[in-house]
Image 1 (cartoon, rainbow, N blue to C red):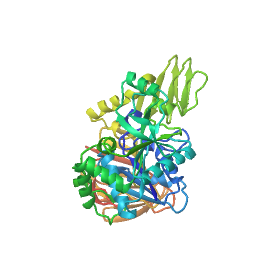
Image 2 (cartoon, rainbow, N blue to C red):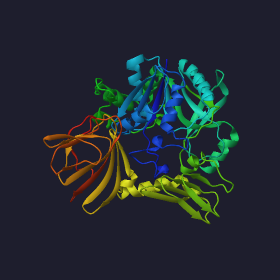
Image 3 (tube, rainbow, N blue to C red):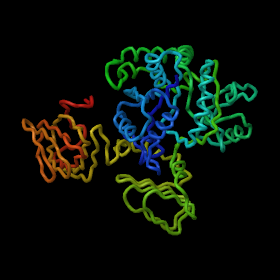
Length: 474
C-alpha cells in the first residue's frame, strides 16, 4: 500500500508580498487559477491511493480544507490530516506522519513524502518514478528523488550518486548529500554528471524509516514518540500535543536520517520540476511578449523590457525600465531588480524585526468561516468587508475596547446581540456596544456579505474574547 504524505508548512518568504505567514506559498494562485497545494493534491490523487495524509500547521487547516474542496477527486480517496502546533522542520513532521500511518495501516506501508510547493506537469513520468521508488522501498531502501541539474544552481542541495551501483532499473546508490554549494562547486557538480538536485521528495516503508530515525537520531525519535503518545486520537482532525511537540529538536530529514542511513537510493526524475522558490521562477510560468516582459494582471509597459509585473486589482504602468520585478497587492508593493529575486526574504526579515503586520497578514484575511477585508482605518475607526460562507458562523465573542455596527449588504445574517437573536437581510443593521457578547452566522445558501464599522480607542485583532467557537480556537 502506498500513502502519499503532503507536507505544508513553509512561509515562502521569497514570494512576498503575495506569500505571507498567514497565507503562505502553497496557497498562491498560479496563472492557471490553481494553487501549488491543489496541484500537489491532484498529483498525489493521480496515483490512485486509498488515502492521502496532509501534515500542516493547525492554523492552515481550514484554508487547506477549503482549497481541497475546490478540487475534483476520484471517489474512494480518504483525505486525512495531521496538525502541527508549530513548525519543527521535516524530520519531526514526517516521523509523526509515519506513526499515524503505522497506527492505521502497519509498518509495511510505503510513504511517499511530497512537499506542497512543488510544480510538476508531467504526471505520467512522475508516476513512473514513484513506481520505481516504491519498488526500492519494498527492498528496504530509503529513497529520494533527484532532479538532473539544468544549470549550476546554488539555491538547492545536491545528491551525489554512485553511477557504478545501479539498483533495479531506475535507482542509484547515494554516496552523499551536499549542502547548497558555491557557484564554483555547483559548476563542478554539473560537469561531473554524478550530482542531482535534492528535490525534498522521499519514498520509504514506515518501519524502515522509523527504525533508521531511532538509530540515527534517537532523541528525535523518542521525542516524537512521546508527543504522539500524548496526542488524543478522538478528535478530527488529529492535532499533535502542543507542549510535548514544542520540545522536539528542529531538524530536517536530511540531517536527521538521510545523511546517516545505511541503505539510501536516489531515483533520477525524468519529469519537469520546480519548487517555485522565487518570483523569477513564478514569472517563468507567464508567457513573455516580444520585449521579454511577462505580465499577470493589468499592466501597460512602454519602452520597457525583461520585466515581470503582477497586479491583483489595479493597473500598473511602466515607462523606460528594464529587468524589473513589480508585484502589487492591495496593501504592499514590491519593486526589485529581477536578478535579486532570491533576496526578497531580507525584506520580510526587516518587516518582522519591526513588527509590521504585512509580513504576516494580507488586507484580506482568511478565517474558517470566510474572509474579512480591511477597507479603511484611521484614528478610532476601522471599516471591514466581511464574507461568511453558507452555514458558517463567527465565534460568540465580545470586545473590551471597541463597539461594532454591522450592515448587511447581501444574503442573510443571524445575529446574537446580547440577550437578543435576530435575522437581518440586505440593508438592515445592528449595533453592538463594547462588552456585549455577539455572534454572526449565515443561515442562508449564499454568502452573507456585510460591512462592519468598528469604533473605539483600540481596534487590534487581539481584543477578541471568545466565549464559544465552532472551530476550536481560543
